Length: 194
Image 1 (cartoon, rainbow, N blue to C red):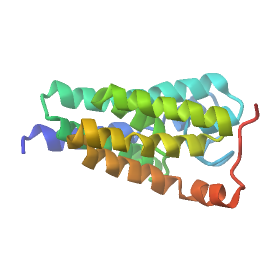
Image 2: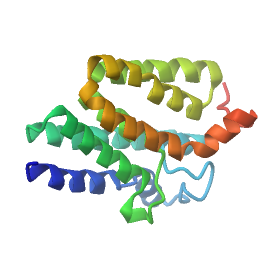
Image 3: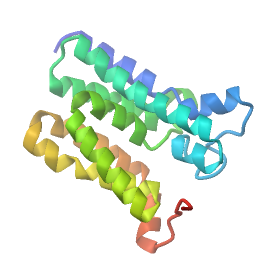
């Protein structure tokens, strides 16, 4: 194992730990997004709270940090599997951020950035599934779950070396959505208004 991989894993985790929703809220003198709305420091909660510019900025930055982590791994000429591990570290940082008492987001936007760099066709498939599901059901959680799980069969066929780290990444996303899954099963999950 090259020395670059452990260093990049640590760097990716630290980068992923930056919570842009919390940062932007503080800069804008707004309430902590972890204490209001869904309690999730992510773009969906920022949008739910009615701040579209900050929601968009949060989304772009969360996608960007995942993409940048994998880009660094690719620039270091690591193999695809190792790049997947670096992406997993970035998503882990987003979900369990060391800077914010391990109270992080659900990992979907950071994972989207990771997948854009690892396999853009899989990212495109996931984005399509997300858009279709959300347009029909108006539930970001359900759309995120369908998109995350839906890209795994494509990876198993076209990029099996990524299946391990991406499956772990999807597992993290599912774990962070466990309360949403419960509400989906009970029929009580919140919907965005049309």
